[in-house]
Length: 158
Image (cartoon, rainbow, N blue to C red; front, side, top):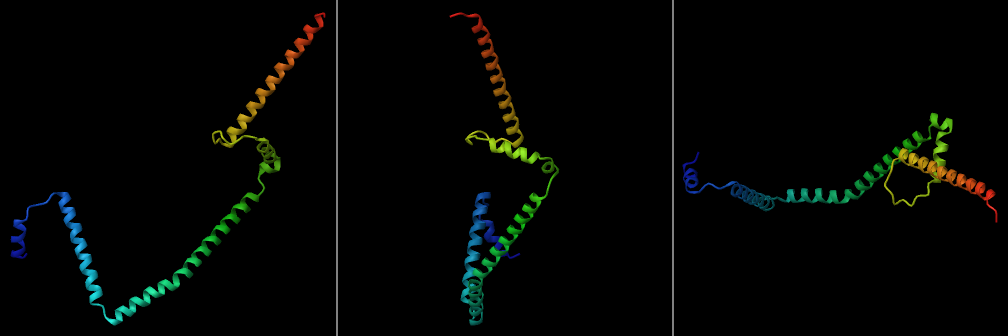
């Protein structure tokens, strides 16, 4: 250790955690500034040419590299979509039984306005069957009332 540095540090009061962090950031800023300044002030012709070639090569090749990456990403997406279509095209036992066709008919009957809650497919089917049963029960009740009215109308005279 250097005795001069120890003497200088003895006079400096200790800083709290925030002060230490601020001093450290200030030191990093000074180091970065000095290093950057020394790098460009001590650079030779060979260094400048090398830097120019690297930056120019990057600027020239970047558009082609971007196009290549986009092309590969698109081809991957197309392959994935093709695999999904092939997987969906495979016949399932439900399709052989005709269950899928019945399900599609139920989905075509749907005439909602889309403002309700987002329900799962099973919940929609249950709700649809429950509504259908309620409508049939109401229709049955009305038919019975009409029959009762006809029975009463037989006994009434004008």
